[in-house]
Length: 370
Ligand code: GLU
Image (cartoon, rainbow, N blue to C red; front, top):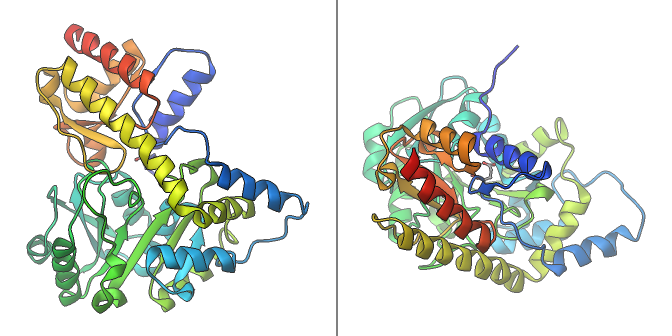
C-alpha cells in the first residue's frame, strides 16, 4: 500500500472541530477557514436551483455559465477554465497531468504544506528554495535539466506576502526562458488588505506556460462546498477534464450553484468576506502587539500571521511548542515546520474576534508557563 503524509492544517483543524463538537473550550488558530455566515447570494442561488428537485450528473468541465464567469474573473477564456472540487484538487490535477516520474518542481519556502506532498503524489520531486519572496534569479540558481515546474503562491500562505507586477513579470519571464510551467496559486486574491493583487494570467506573453488556481473557499468563504477553478492553456485544461472524467466526474452541482451566486455578486460577496477578515486581522495584530514584547506587522493579505518562535521566548522547537499548547491549553496553532520553516509558527486569524482575543490572552499565559 502507498503511504501519504496527512495535511497537518486539515488534521489540526479537524481536531479543533472535534473538540468543539464535544463542548470543549478551544482557541482555534489552525486552518484558514473563514468562519462567517455565508453571503445570502450564495445560499439564495442554491435554494433557487434546488427547487427543480433534480440532481443530474454535472457537466464534466463545470456549468457553462460558471466557467464563463470564472473566466472573466481569472483573466482567461471559457475554454481555458475547468471547475474542480476545490483549489487543492486543481493543483493536484495539474501536477498529475504534467509531471513525469522524477521531474523537479521548484517551491519557495515558507510554502503551503500541501505543495510538496502533491508533487510527490504526482511522482515529481519538490525542490525547496528558501525565499520569502522568490525571484527569477532564484529560479536560475535552482533549476536543473530535470526541472519542469514552479509552484508559485501569490498571495502566500503562510506569510501573506504579495508580489507586484514587476516581480511576477521577472518570475514568469525567467520560467519561460527555462522551459518551466508555472502553477500560480491565487486563492487569496480577494483577501488583499494593503496593495494590489496582480494575477499571473494578466501576462499574455507568458500565458502558454501559466496555470492559475482559484477557489471558493477563501474569497467566497465557502470551503465546505469544495469548489475551485483551474485556468490553463486549452490543451492542459482539456487533459485535466479527462482526468476528471475518470476520477471525480466533475464538481458537485450545489457547490457550482453557490459559486455562481458568488460570482454574480462578486463585488459585494468578496467585500463582505474581505471586510470581515481585515477586521479580524487588525484585531489579531493589535491584540498580539498589546500582549507580547516583540511586535508583528500586519500581513498584507491572506488569513495568516507567520510569527517567529523567538517572540514567545521558548526553547522548544515549533512542533513541540504547538503540541504543548494543544495538549495543555487547547490552543491550536500550526508549527512552521509544516510550511518548511521551523523558526516560526502560523496563526490563522479567520475565526471571530472574541476567540482571537481570548486565545491570544491564553497563549500569553501559556507561553510564560511553558
Ligand atoms: N488552506 C488552508 C490552510 O492552509 C485550509 C486547510 C488546507 O487545506 O490546508 O489552513
